[in-house]
Length: 120
Image 1 (tube, helix red, strand yellow):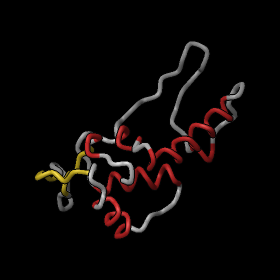
Image 2 (image 1 turned 180 degrees about the horizontal axis):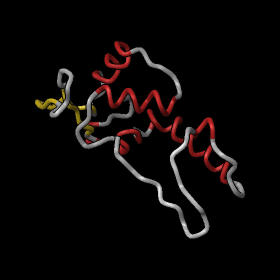
Image 3 (image 1 turned 180 degrees about the vertical axis):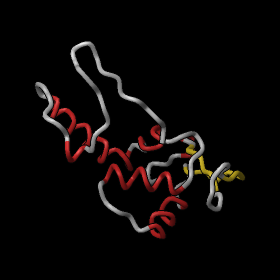
């Protein structure tokens, strides 16, 4: 996933990533905003395919599954997940594999919004 380092604003002493289930006390209505954002992300992960915007242009199915598991806060069956993803027209397999990894390089995929159909 993309590496984004949070930066504190002028009125915040510090900014850091934290588990959404263990948020520190937030000012004003920011706790409500964070929970609404997570709820919206979960709802739109499949229907609007917004998860692909959080992945590199070329990604592995492992990265895609990891994203879904983090957002949905549940472990997904690897075999079923891959079977469902491979049926989607807009997830396009590439003739490329990961580079610079210590394990067996995985096939890379990309997302093509032009191939998205209403039922995929």
